[in-house]
Image (cartoon, rainbow, N blue to C red):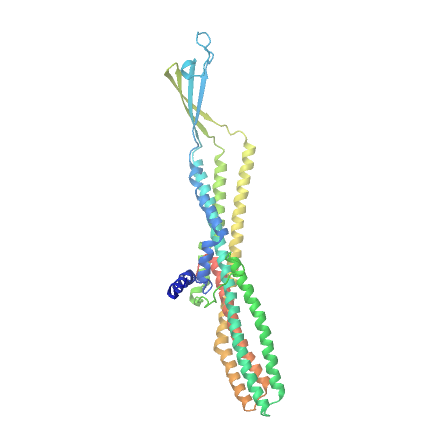
Length: 420
């Protein structure tokens, strides 16, 4: 059977359509964060736990289920001709008691508020986990980008070194330069090839780290990184304003504040246990087939175990003090981390500006002058290679400063719990 060329082409296009519609992640940071948010199982588990904790608030403040008690009196029917029975209308009398437990005033509200505070802690843990995961992905993507760009710069330098080697070889052939120049060019080229191998290994490690954070197979391919995120302007990195945002938005502080609230509600609830809880009952009494008597019942527990309650109260006070201390310690550490990362970002910005506006232009100018001088026989080949290395060092310094700024930005956003 002869296949039709057009049908074969359409089949290939149909098979390739899913790949075209679903490009590889990694070209930008946003694609990786979206992938992590939707697929990370640990994050999903914490979200489900937070949802479950939120559902505990209503039951915690609800009244307990009522109790129905049935008492059959004189089931042997003593003094009558009737035989023993367990039917309510064939015994001496049947007493029904409907009992509703009622906690002391305010206890239900406190239990509900305590459950709400526990739910807020679960939400804070979920948000903190996401903030930490996002920061790690941002840092790993920065490393992936930096190694990829370093590879590209080194390949460009390798091509340039090859061109310089050809110039040195031509000058040596013409008797204008010593053979040592051509040998130096080859040695430099070999050294760059060795650095390329090391950089490819580092890039490979960065790819594995990213895939691990994304819960993908370690060797799953990623797209080439295209760009880094823009760094916010210095005016938007005001220290005092960011401190206020940290206090208001940080997920860890949110969880610690919820812990303090839970400890406060628990303390109030423990103090309310000084007062009794009640059982309210309504009791109809059936004789034969008729209900001819009604009764009401009130039960209460008597809080006599004062030593036990005082110990519980002291425990609640200690737990509250511990929660407050833990919150203060976390806040102090987070504010210190914020200051440190702001300083690191400012340092990286200044280094990048200095390298871009001064160091790199000077290095490029020096290299061009050295190249022209070598071609004219005014400088030696060692000077030319040194000028070339200065250009590469300046470009790598710029790349490193950009990476440092990105990592500092990721840490600041982790501390704030939101993107800048």
